[in-house]
Amino acid sequence: MGSAADGEGAVEACLRLLPELVLLDLELPGIDGIEVTRRLKRGAEGIEVLVLTSFDEEQKVYEAIQAGASGYLVKRLGPERIRDAILEVMDGGTVIEPVIARRFWNYFHAVQSRPAQPENPWALSPLELDVLRYVAKGLSNGEVGEVMTLERRTVRTHLQHLYRKMGVRSHVEAVVLALRHGLVEL
Image (cartoon, rainbow, N blue to C red; front, side, top):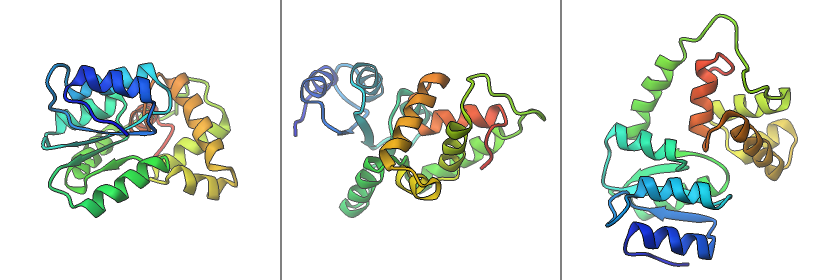
């Protein structure tokens, strides 16, 4: 367990301590939380980032998710919702506060106008495509594992492989790209 007073200190502490999850504000002295997220995702595999901030602007949410955050919550939430979000992220899920999620739903819906023939430019395997399709439906890694009779760790490994192939860092980015190419539906 650790804490930091600024962005640079947060990156340094996380790369030294290698926590499983970082609860991160976006407004930090020095580099902001979005850049901290980018650096953590590049510098240490397996660190999950859950943003807890006062910003509820769609652009900030999108930037945080693109940087690799696994969740985005606004500080007005109670402690039990934050605890539930931490557990969801640690189970492989992506958490976005419902008020903000509606905006993303509209974005995803717009992206879903896809080409007639699905494209798979990343050469995802049939198994990786199945995992991605279940994730697009909102299932956590554990739930995907139950449906596909796979261990949760195996699902996570398949996700890491398809993230590398697709050049993304999160469920959200992978689903958006897959939607654009017609590989998944919501």
